[in-house]
Length: 287
Ligand code: GUN
Image 1 (tube, protein in one colour):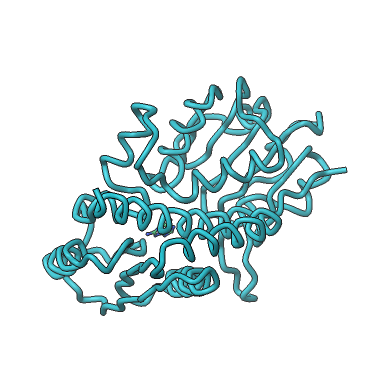
Image 2: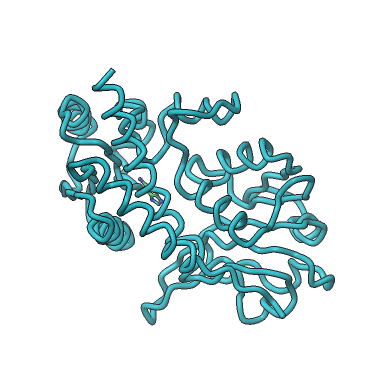
């Protein structure tokens, strides 16, 4: 029987832990989310982030800006947030409008408040394999936690990741390599992707094209593990992943559903980063 890798049991367990950690902080941690423009998916994501924060007893303010918001204005806003001791975490929802192309806002958020884990200091901790007071990118750390929960080890496995984004593919490839996986990082120009996915033990797809991975991308061994990061909204308002779930699920050992798989793990990781950043900031203040 194929194992469906639902995130709910993990989220349910962690909500209790997060509530306890927040009570121990005396005052609730505070997150600021900056949403520029009117991307419909972004609106849904930020609403989910706020709802989850409220569920665990954290505060979340969504700062909405119009499409004509400028990089200079974002820079000023982030400076204010960095200087505000009452704010523990901050993120800028992506994608940003075209006027932000090439603008490195990631470096303008204090690394201690960078709950997305995008700042170069946080990313560099992955490359150097250092642990401690670093905040790691939410989707990659969420995927690793999901695999751990279901006792799926990446050690010595052949892992194929499809998608080389800064949010998922690139940091995840390094994090899995740190866990002794052999990682192949694929992208839209990779030759013969089917041959690579067919020989992989674990396939992680972050392409964003609904049902892109049809059943011929997988072999007949029934041993493969599939992690689907894709979230595409269809015309009927349903959400679909990168994998043709119905035609693939009986062919593999384990697979994440969409919705109910990686998405909630990303939000859980964000909340964990927020609590961690509040804990670090409070310890540093006392010292
Ligand atoms: N857009 C899609 N995923 C993410 C994410 O993890 N963080 C931010 N800030 N924007 C996103």
